[in-house]
Image (tube, rainbow, N blue to C red; front, top):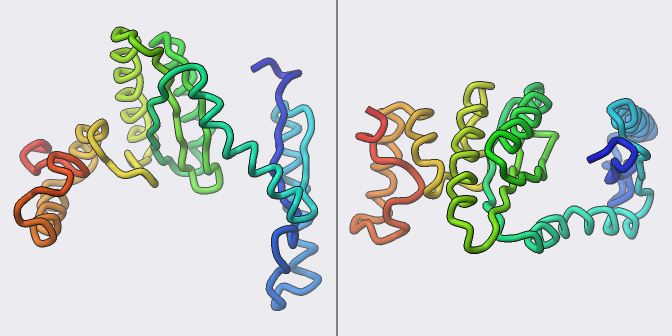
Length: 208
């Protein structure tokens, strides 16, 4: 997105959603204001056009609405492959840069929605309906994203779980001992293997 069209929104002033705990007092609220101001400065220094700061519950709800509408807005462009990866917070800028390069190299559209505070990123890959080649490129792009995440000291999932697409990444990340522990817990809860068969975690043999 061109720099002049970038817009950063979503800072909520301390106390906007609820009253801060009494133990924070005036000093805690002052520190919160100072930190929010510092974050706003960093956004602007990184190329943001302006920063909105919510000061009451209504404004907070309005800003969060934009975030909640991001996914349905992307669906208007085509089916969205929704996944997540998680990296250390210090690696978030590099991970986002790698995702951008992967999108260019794979010729796919990737949008990022993130919980930047804990390093959890949601690379949303768009593949047009009926375009099998685009779906293959999207899958290849996601495999590269998972590999990059692990190279940066991250994990294949911070929120969504493993499912199917991340089975190879999970097999590479987890040791055979951990995989066997997962299998034992799964077997204890699902001895007949009827709950999400083949999903969630790879068989220990896949990692060997």
